[in-house]
Length: 114
Image (cartoon, rainbow, N blue to C red; front, side, top):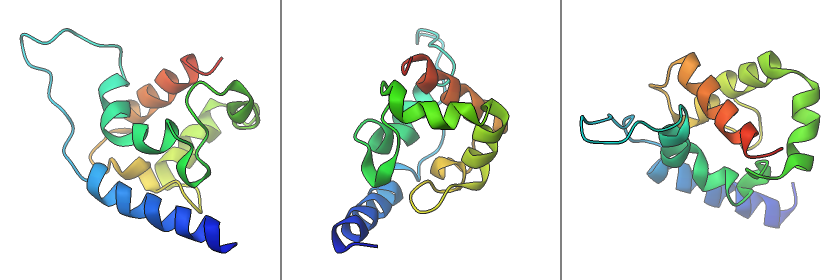
């Protein structure tokens, strides 16, 4: 791995430790009900998928998501659950997220990437 990619990976890993290690947000009575996946995306996925950190496909970049979509949604979800080296950690660092919550996040990002 080139040195710059290695540094990018390390910076991403450190960011994930600080951003991704919090509990799932709870929806209060007075909060508006949001689209499924939005809060989890904001808490756990945004830091990499908004910037492309560590090679993450950017939310909104249809070309970056196309090869992943060719594999099918089920295979994509399997990759999210187990992680995809070198940059995608298992469950996107949302270790308390259910498989359904992860699927909701994936759907949320894909809707914005058409």
